[in-house]
Each structure stands twice: as C-alpha cells, then as structure tokens.
Length: 160
Image (cartoon, rainbow, N blue to C red; front, side):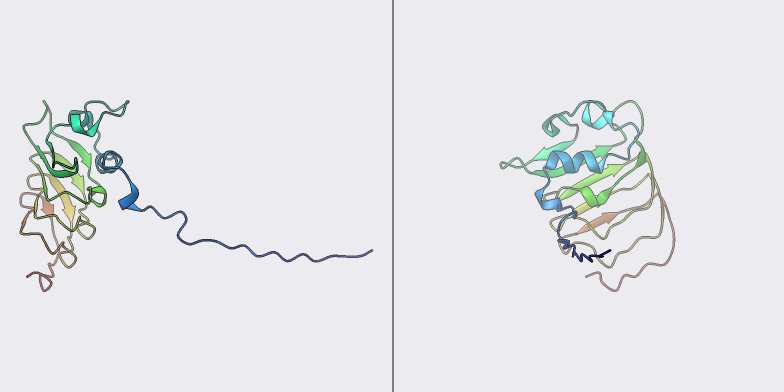
C-alpha cells in the first residue's frame, strides 16, 4: 500500500475582504450611517425600499452631487430619532454634520471622521461613554457634544 502526501499552499490576498469606504457610493454610506437608527424612515423616506439620497431630508449637495452637509435636528419628523449612529460611515465629502435634539444613544467614535469635516454638532442626545479627541480631522473648527451622557478623561493635547 502506497501513501502519497500532497502539500498545497493557500495564498490569501489580505486586501480582499476589506471594505474600502472610498469605493462605496454616497447612498450606501448614508444607509450604513443610519442603519442603527430604529426610525430612520423619518430621514430617508422608507425603511423597506432604497430612496435616492437626493430625496432625504436635510442633505445638501455641491455642484458635483457630493454630500457636503447634513442637518438633522429635533424638528425633523413627528418624533425624535432613536437608536445609534455609525459615524465611521459619514461620506468623505461631508463638511457639516448636525444631529441634535434626538434620543440617539451609544458611544461616539470620533476617530474616523471625514477629513474635510469642519463642523460637528451631536448635542442633546443620549450618547454615552468616553470620547477620543486625539484623531479629529485637521479641518474641524467646531465640535458640539453638550447635553449628552459622556464621561471620562479628555486628552486635549492633540487639539490646535
């Protein structure tokens, strides 16, 4: 009886399987951004069918149809937004993001915000935990996080 030993190697491309945010459409990024909001239809129009992001409330575009500003405040809809927000999916062209006066909760990851972001207002929600201010975008001029449940030490040595 003869035994044969076969040795095979498996080559894995480490780039495969990684999500490249830059290759995703702005509509996909917006859907991911609000995917944790339980009543997201207030913003997008429908939870079941994909609505063109141009029809979403409070979204502003430039001449190239890139999203540059998002303004979602307590006055949108008949009820406050609830659930959680996934800030890492903010489109890379956003310069202003306002979402205040709702009932959003969870932690805030400020380490993967878009580089051109100048103004961020997430006040009057229920965000909790500590926040990391060491990796904010260089363009950021205004950060408003008041009236949340944030706690913990703040490292402000990276702020200019």
